[in-house]
Amino acid sequence: MSQYYETNVSKGTVQEHDVIMRGRKLLDITGVKQVESFDNEEFLLETVMGFLAIKGQNLQMKNLDVDKGIVSIKGKVFELVYLDEHQGEKAKGFFSKLFR
Image (tube, rainbow, N blue to C red):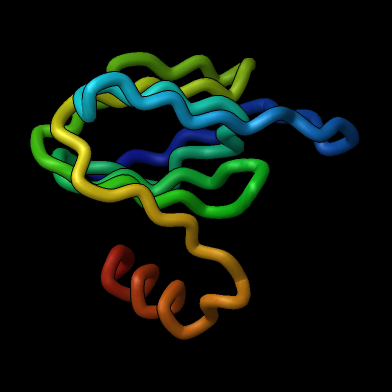
């Protein structure tokens, strides 16, 4: 179930980006520009600080506030990884796996 959501983050202002994890079961993320894709094992979010990949088990989008750029995810979280430009090939490989 891959979806695409785009938030209305204004281009002129810098929005804050926070990741709050509660007990490895609930994530609240602010500063989300768009949800690129997601399923029950992996989310890919574009944030104001770069792409954020979240891996886990039984992941579900609990809340999405498009106007404020807030996403809440529940499930068992295994990994949070930022895919920066200076990671080049690693990010490319990750995206090619996602969009096959």
